[in-house]
Length: 357
Image 1 (cartoon, one colour):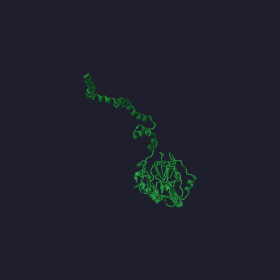
Image 2 (cartoon, one colour):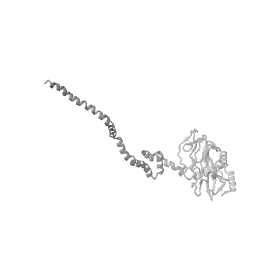
Image 3 (cartoon, helix red, strand yellow):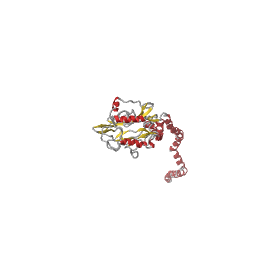
Image 4 (cartoon, rainbow, N blue to C red):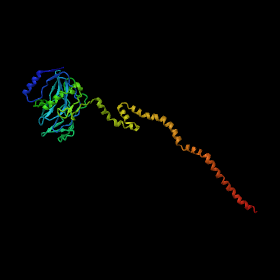
């Protein structure tokens, strides 16, 4: 599964004796491809002057383990970090260590994110001895950073496959540009002691082994090198087709959800309608069921009932029926008695006049 080549150690040692401080040559060759890069949020920068160094998969006696990304202080003013990368050659995967230099060199076309999109570095640049930061790819948190600029960087952070190696089956196909080849010939500075210690601590944490975390380490990034606990620790998060679907369905919610409110449907019913998406008849049928039940039962029987109750004749009949037997019989009797006697009383007054005749 893996081969440790002592000859490579000798070649690396000879290289260090004949050349300035450069990146170490690949000293391990294995036949297993490294896992995909995990997805994580960049922790906030500790203070101005730090530069972001992305996480990567390293290899040890127990297999691949994750070295969390972290903010690091450059060893010198004007230096930028070229990340290390895995490359496939001659049937084996070898590690090409990262290094510091005045320019960013070739790192296999691997998209590490946060400014390292596969070519160069878009997260910051030196100007007059001061490191300026691209606010579009850096997390400042509550730190006051004055030297900033805006530059859009295209990062494929939503890709399903996060390839972490160059060449071979499934690897990136990027090749170094002439400029990157020239950078490779320049003097470099290897990883600092702080970075080396950071990697060593990661190698002793079994939770960072790929065999344990299955590609989703709980410590994916840290605010400072070697600090694997505290607020600055960020865990990996899963992003894939299942995580992308809610974002896609969340956009049409307002548009498709505008119709159901007219039918007085609850918000949950609207959400189900948008989830179905390709089955629009279902929302329509569910909205039509309440009217289908109400017309046959409520409208037809209720209409006559409402008419009978609403008509005033019903109350009058009941009211008239009650007073008719008592008041009606009593009232006409007294009224009829006074009027007839009044009429006959007039003739009696006329009769006496007739008597003297």
